[in-house]
Image (cartoon, rainbow, N blue to C red; front, side):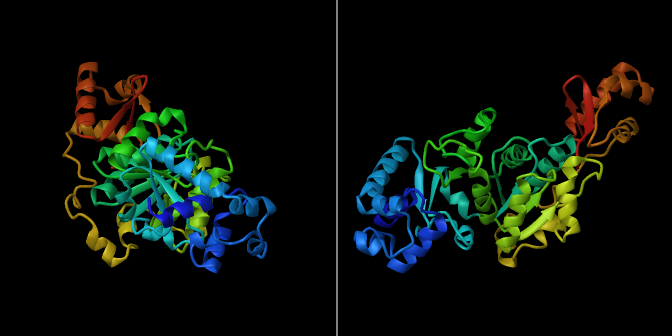
Length: 368
């Protein structure tokens, strides 16, 4: 670790010293190292708390930095400072970029063209289907998918990207070594292998509620824009939407059923001027030309392709919806097929990727 990164890290560990104030302090002094050369009398000229001044002047910050470096090295965690060339350039442009990022995985993916996809933890089947479709298609073009590893839409966004062979970045509201929620442990491990897990919080940090609104600015800050799939009226995803606009990035919202609580957020954003997302072309149209030039052309025509269906297959598909499911007995009554015929049709439709089977022998249509 170079000297600049080490001093940035030490400053980030000063209690009561927020990110924006650290940036102003470094700007006034000239460099992070210069802050530690100030005498207690010189530090007193800045509007810092007595605790923060003492932590810097006594050398406690530098000692804390040494401990953080040792802990990160033992766990294979890379630390990037805002002064590093590898630090994501999109994130550097926001009002208050994190002074340091703790990274597990491949930090180079942080410099790829990225789109954030976030939404409700309590998402619907429709929300999951749409999220998988969007992230698969964007990933197939070489776009990195960024989200927060939360339950629901976030987790589905990561899965869609990884299952299509793409890359994904998870921005944590805890230390990068603290998996939250625990149920996403396997997904977390896959992201470490195919992408990167990052956090601005020191290793071992508990996922405190106040951390998540703070991390949301990083989710949007890494990206050219943010997609909101589902969000209730007071969802944390709407904080990400607001931050996206404050950072002068693009904002898309997926329209939903007006009777669904999860559709309130995106529908209201559209009402206020967010761009409607009907397919990934709506995203591509807003990306800068030079970014489009970086994307992979392979597979660009693939999204949405479906093999031709037989008459019986079309009949079953027409009975199904993407935001609801039917039991096999209901399909048996409506289709007028024998049980053997119906099972064969359902199997073929699953193999063609048109429908999916849910627990309890229930079926729904995939969003294509």
